[in-house]
Image 1 (tube, rainbow, N blue to C red):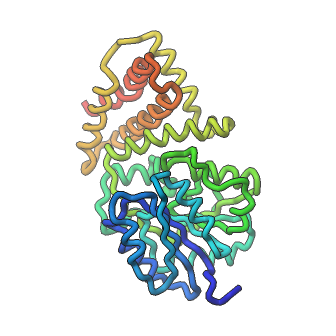
Image 2 (image 1 turned 120 degrees about the vertical axis):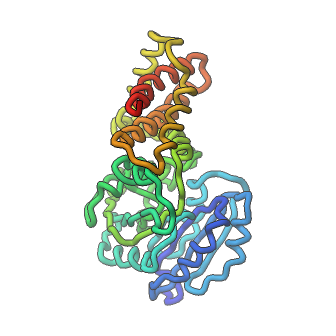
Image 3 (image 1 turned 45 degrees about the vertical axis):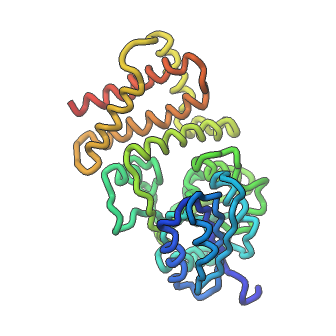
Length: 347
């Protein structure tokens, strides 16, 4: 290999991150890796000055390649464009809100040197940074709830399923990536399940294995409230339907959301018009959860689980039924079954 060729590539889709992107770029300048590496950043048609920053920044420790999508297409398309530009044998996939520790790139490279099997992908750790406030919702979704990442349950050095292909911090050998039928599926218009779907095909077609290592570490600068994460879970539900439409056998692995939705459908037929509207119950539940974001309560994790699962399944309901006239009755039944009891815990 040419000594000036990158030993490893980092790819990063970017969207409206100008407020925080400079220090991410600077963090890659602080990497302690002795080998050359490249960072390929694809701006997904940001409406702020993200692309200007990418093109004006002058790194000292790595080669920065920045391109811009002609229109917003989502992270799947941006990652595909970046993958097509990789010139090294290894690729690390990250988010534009991930600030790497100084040994981040070196740890990924050394992990693949230690595990040379081309089928092994390395999942690194993602954590909330110490200098960013962390509310109870954020502790929950990366803790016992595991709605964002499952690190709370992972053990260093163990192997995990394709559902742990977290594109905030994972590295893969390009020989493996080039062997799959296609990369990220752009039918996933939202940032949800497009990584799991690719990982599932990498596993089925090529036998990929995911090994978790507690280091390399990426600090996740993405503050959430119950309002923002509930909307995120709704989008996850919408994309979950896309995943199961492509791979029906995965419906069971997602804990049977279609069966749950069909159960709400039956209940709505039997109880149309009974009780409060789903929008009123949603607002009550979100406001209640918001009131406790900086407080504690013995039922708080149970409340978060109920509320976030509600919005996840709401996404499935809308994906399945769209604008059909009976969908409001289904939403009402779903809200009563999921949210009324949770609200009563705090009375």
